[in-house]
Length: 113
Length: 114
Image (cartoon, rainbow over all chains, first blue to last red; front, top):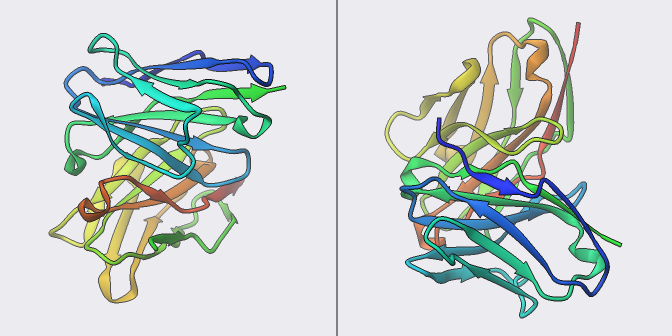
């Protein structure tokens, strides 16, 4: 069964450093998403991406965040200058259309120290 | 604002017993509904989904859920729980009118005792 692949599975970074979280969505999917889950809290929407542009973003997704689909297969989330409160599990998801359901990756656990 | 409520933070059931996990939503549009399961350290696996049609939907691993519009609920059920079902379960709701993003409930942790 096709999978959404995320790397790395765990990343530790120092406050103020830039991080890039990588995702390989399912190859024929058209819609791409990032969600995050702070420990003990709900899974929260960050951003959706379609047709090579952001279609929607949440209040969390401020100027420190950016997304890119550089080569037609990878989908990346960049945090420019990490803060302690960015520590969370970050999930990538993709779908062909909303009626197909969303396939999530296994997540990247980001720890900012 | 859209919201999803899973009123039970933890549920413990005996192996072989039946299970019902509750999910209520508040949405201004016609929603589509999902249940996901997350084992420790793992991603979110789709159990089942509802978009339209038959309000009783079947999913993987023997789970089913029933959409009740009048009660704004989408409860997850399983007739006989297995120890391997121990995990955290998330209800999620989306709508085309809200850009297809999903709003998740807080999750219910299921413990299975032998």
